[in-house]
Length: 262
Image 1 (cartoon, rainbow, N blue to C red):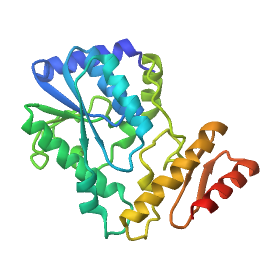
Image 2: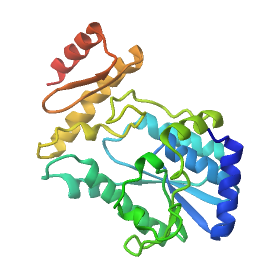
Image 3: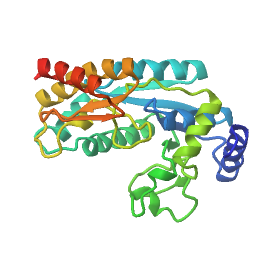
Image 4: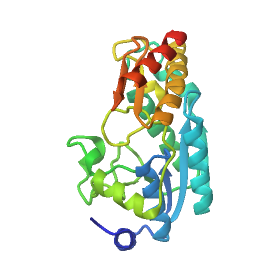
């Protein structure tokens, strides 16, 4: 496992070779462990870095507050952008999963926010487990940590792309980075939380009412999950319960709550 000090030194060396020391870098910062570590490493490496967080009407307010506190401790500029209207335009009336539409809105907004506010580089918290052959950023002809793909329109830095999810976890723990958890089930075993809209049933036509329901149900369920230290989410409108390590008592409580919310 790489040590935190070594990871910081590696970013310093790479940044010097890549000409990043005099560049303004904007990090797409969700408040999760990956983007938090990316922001931390770039700051500790002495780079000119700021954070950009997107939120919408259905975002978890708890994680947003944690993210704001994190950047305050690092003494960094932190920009917050509400993408509710753009998300509704892209997602409403279409079938899920909604995450595809949301990522499109965020990347488009991040690009133009960066370009319009004098940033030279856009950074993301992708790790080696996120690297998919054939994806846009993996068409880089040079070092995959810094891509200049014309279609994106701004150089994209991925400081964690050579670290596995396990290594990112260890580095974040060493740095004392402990993001606020909603105890979502998520789509993988790793702590990969997002927002409640990912739990809209795949073949459903997305509507604002269904988005409201996904938030309301999963917010109430998160209280049970946090108390019992299990990971739970509920798909809507089918109300399928997804849980890691739930016992029968927890399942019964979840079902009582969801019955009231139907």
